[in-house]
Structure formats: C-alpha cells, structure tokens
Image (cartoon, rainbow over all chains, first blue to last red; front, side, top):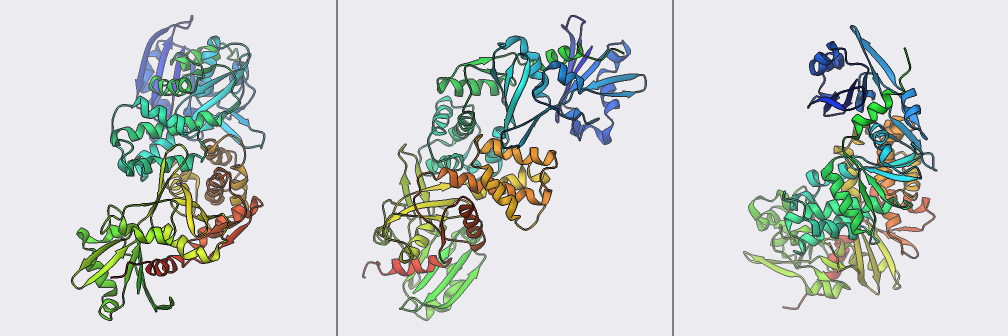
Length: 293
Length: 293
C-alpha cells in the first residue's frame, strides 16, 4: 500500500509491504497550500507516480488533504471513535486509472457544547494504540495546536485543542516580548522556571507580561526569555488539563515532545514518549478496515 | 501649570489655572516614538511654546516620556505609593530658560518575587483618588496592557498587568482566528458568550481554539467572532483577578471601559465608571507636592 501524511505545509509518502514494513519513503515541502489550483492528482503523481505504476495499492491519505481546502472534504467522525469508525468515514477520490482514500478527522464536544476538531492526529493515535494500555489513558500531541486525547479500549473518547504553539510563535514574532528575545538554544533552567510560574495564580495574560517586567529589571537574560515564555505557555497548558490520571503518552515531533516531557517531569508527572512514526502505522491499520470491492 | 500626558503614540497637553481648571488643551500624534533623535525639548516647544513664553509653570509630564526610550528615565517608585511618594521620584529636565518634571512609574512584586510595572497609569489613579473610598478598592485600567491596582488610603498597595489588549490585537491580525473574522461593531450577545466561556474549565489556550472550532461548524457568524474572542480574553482576565472584593472602579478609554463594564455586570459584579480625564487631575495633584525652589 501507499500511506500518505499530507498536511498544510508538508507531504510525506511511504510505500509499505503487505506486512506493514516500510519499503521506501519520500517527503517534499508540497503541503496542500503549495498545490496549485487544486491539482492534487498531479501533485500526487509527481511524487509517487512510479509507485502507482508499480501497482502499489491501496492508497490512504491523512491530514489536511481531507479538509475544506484539500482534495475532498472528509467530514469529521464523531467521538468516541476507533479505527473502525474512522475508516467508515473515509472518502474515495479517483483519477485516470487510480483511486485513493482520504481519512476523516475527528470531532468532539465538551460539556458546554463547544466543538473541537483534529485532522491527522487521529491517524497518529490509531498508529500508537498498540503502545497504550487498554484502560483510560491520555495522549498528548504537541504542536502549533496541541491535542490532548483520552483513549480507552482502542477508541478516542474525547479530546481538547490548545493553541500553545501558535501563541508562542505570535508572541515571539509580533509582541512587545519578542523585541527582547534573541535566538538561542533552549535554556532548560529558564524553561522550567516558566513551567513553575504557570502554576502561580494570576493567569496566563499576567504571566506573559511578567516576561517583560523581568527583562526591565535585568532579572532574565535576553537569550533565555524565549525559553521562559515557552515554559509559561506549556506549563499553562498542563495546568489546564486538570483531570488527567496516570502517565501522559507523548506523540509527535521529537524536539517538542522533549520539551513536554521536561515540563511534565518538572511537575512530578510521568511522561511516556511514543514513536514519532505513528502516522504511517495508523494508515496501515486503517487500510485493514477498507471496504472490500 | 502645564500638565502633559506623553505616551508612546500620543501627546496631550493641558494649560491649567491655579485652581486646577483647564484653560486650554491640545493634542497631537507626537508620541515619544515619533520624536526625532531625542529632540524632546524641541517637540515640546513646537506644541506649547506659547504657553511657556506666557509663563505657565510648573510643567509636569507623565507616561512613557519617563521611560528608557523617553527624555530622561525616571526610575519606578516602589509600592505602596501615593502622591507624595510618586512626587518624590520625579526627575527634572531643563533646557534654554525652561524646566519640567517627569513623573516616575510604579513597580511592585508579587508573592513569588516577579516584578510588575506601570508608567502613566499611576498618575491616572492619583487623579481619581477623590472618587475612591478610603477603604481597600480595586481600580482597573483597561488597555493594551490592562492594569488592576489595589488602592487604600490614597496609596497604590499593589497591582498586576494583563496583556489582554495586545493578545487580542495579535490574534486578530496574525492568528488562524483572524482569518475568519470580519470587521463589525461589537456584538454584545457574542461578547457576553465569550465572557461566560472564559469561566469554563479548559484554560485560555483551549478557549481560543474554540473560536475556530465554532466557526468550522457554522456555530458563529464571521462578523461576531472578534466580539466572542474579545469576551473570552476579557473574561479570562476577570477570572484571573480572583480575590477582588466589592466594586471595580474603571478608568480610561470610554469604549474599552464600556466593554469591561459589560463583562463585569454579566458576571454579576459591580462596576463604577470613573472620569476618563484623570491624568490631568493627577498631574495637578502631583504638582502640589513639588519641592519648593
């Protein structure tokens, strides 16, 4: 089969053997926003046309390719949902002599009725199921929009999204805080100080201003301010996830996962780091649920 | 006397009679960032040179003119501080045959030792003292960086800053939320829905993403999304100010004060709106504490 993780800014393709092991992989900065005029079939053929000609099938795709701005919108499947429910929501696209399946995202609602969504992360979670206990557990996927999902018996029960990564990037690029920041590797001590600061009363909007106030009084070096800000934001996210029991399973970009692991451990929480290649494994699992045709 | 409120982006000057009433006022978009090469004396003379020639004296200035980027840095006075303590921290500048006094800002520290600062708002608070009870009361000055100050017996005991206005502007201009927003007058119902949403668990970073998720499901009109976002941010600020007793005294820009009043009242809190011209009254009060020379 061909497994494709097709996001907003990147394209990653894997040619898999029938037993699931990766025969070949390719990636390109060909996110859906970089595909001209909706020519997704052309873009796909340009990347893996030789695999298609060689007869690799089926083709499954997850990520923003199934969004309103993608090839075809695959409507969100509702929680609770496991591999079977997600696979049942796949949408087929066909062109020339080929066809492919697009994996839907997931939606949930909290007790106030406010909706939440994910697209792409559901496939990563499916790919990590064999590493999770069957009892209720929490999976965190850090990112521009971090996801926290409660998973039990192979199903995502509910989840929440946090704009942690996007707010960090905005504050660094455009706010008064960014003016005092110089680029530097993560300063662990200041990152952890930020995580601790987020546990104080006062609220995030106040703690953000504290970065500037500390700078005015020479209490923080410019090259550590971004690490402190990052700690405040990630620490605030961890504080907001109040009712999480047991270990937190981390999934995704290794450098971000490393920061979350450090933040969790500094709060005496247990973090378990899962593989970062779970999207391809999730697509392989979902392919087992394809309708027979 | 001449009272000048000189901020980052604006210049406001008042010629006052000895009894405190305003004889004439002028304003210009001549904030300290628009003054070329530190020529503050020239800028001042260009605006109120005729008042200086007429012998109006003393000249008092508050706001960012006393910051590191201003005419002379007037170091922050520490809390608790009233008119006497603030006046004691004024710095004198002189040029040609003239001189003027620059009012210092205030600093405070919370229980964790994190500093906080204000510059300009201390003068507004001094100007509003005669409208406040002598018992402990809370004054809120909404803005790019909102200030909450506890005032008792004519002194600012402590305060905190919240980046509410700046985060709102950043999210609207640069985030994924901004893309769904169209300009429109404030939608009161959606603003109050945002204030209520901020009282739910989940945290600000999660509630921000809810604006987008509601949009994806057609649960909020594009022209109301900015009002909902504003409600979430102001509501979060109000929630963070946990231990405030009694009425909240609002001071500053009338349209922002109106939003905060609506938010407070929707949470069954009492808001008292004070005059918006308190800076000039504060400068008049501080002038009474000038050293005799």
